[in-house]
Length: 130
Image (cartoon, rainbow, N blue to C red; front, side, top):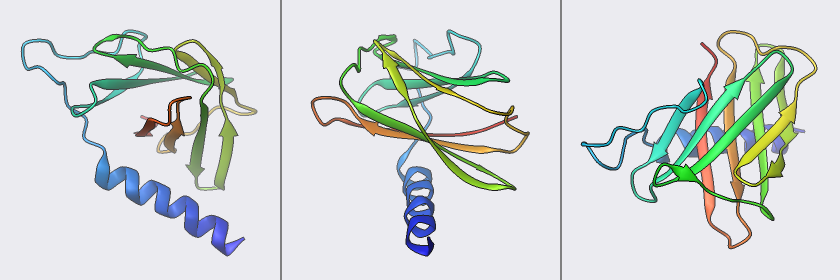
């Protein structure tokens, strides 16, 4: 159990150090297209937008501001709240990944999105519930 918590903590630390939320072109600022929070990686031009509802977490993956099909990949969301951490496997449909929630996420919940597409490209993003 300690090893699992340590590994999850390392994921959050690595994402915090390695992820920069910037647009790849100053003339075209990336904006959330689905009303959520957006993290865009300047190096790969990929964006991950998280939309949280009372019953689901939904992530939209883009490349150069267009939907990026990540079918065949393996992705998960790690949610950290005052009650602890929970891992959610994400179901992929094209560029949209979802996980069902048993309860709404509280303000301040931290969410780490991580995974690889079928070609091995790594995707990571970190979000905090407003």
